[in-house]
Length: 78
Image 1 (cartoon, rainbow, N blue to C red):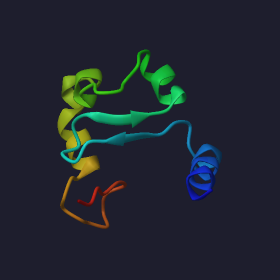
Image 2: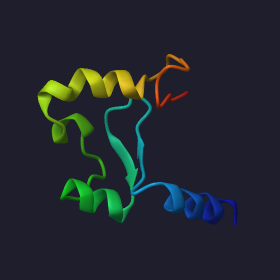
Image 3: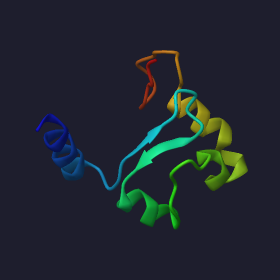
Image 4: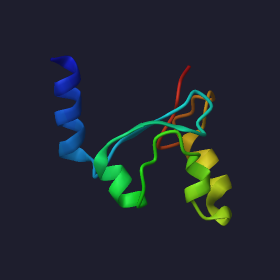
């Protein structure tokens, strides 16, 4: 029930959702909306392989793996 509530809430506020591996590099889970946006099944794909190279540094900083900081839109915690 909790999982369904989280998914319903995510659908209300987001176009798509996906989960990244602990290092922030590999897509561990993605919904059909994210796959549609990206144009392929993203499961087990490296996210940076689908982002222009000039955006890699910005993506890495936005994900901010393991370095909690309130200035970033997304922070992944271990």
